Image 1 (cartoon, one colour):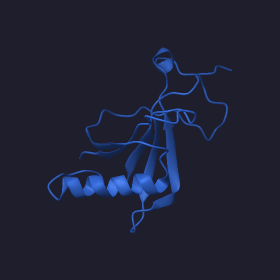
Image 2: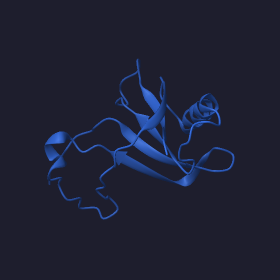
Image 3: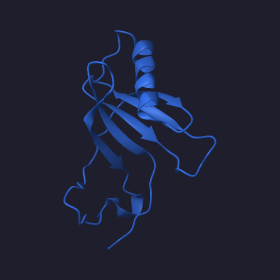
Image 4: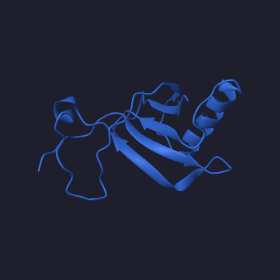
Length: 117
């Protein structure tokens, strides 16, 4: 019965296919606001899970606009190219992050994160 409102970033875990597009399974994560983190409200929908994200080091790139899957795929490819073969990161998934509400038309911020191994 507690509403938390929207938080940023909205993080989508993408599981890329061989051609770089997203698999059908994605995982959407929302940050629990600070005042609820010690004792978060229990979800009433059993498909919603509360998970604690472990500390991580990331490689990141940022871009603007209304992000679509193709944008995330393209920027993930650019980040992969920029990192080259020396950087070690998880190749099974990456994180697509959006920071702005849908009604913000300009100055939008999106990021792609690769988790360092």
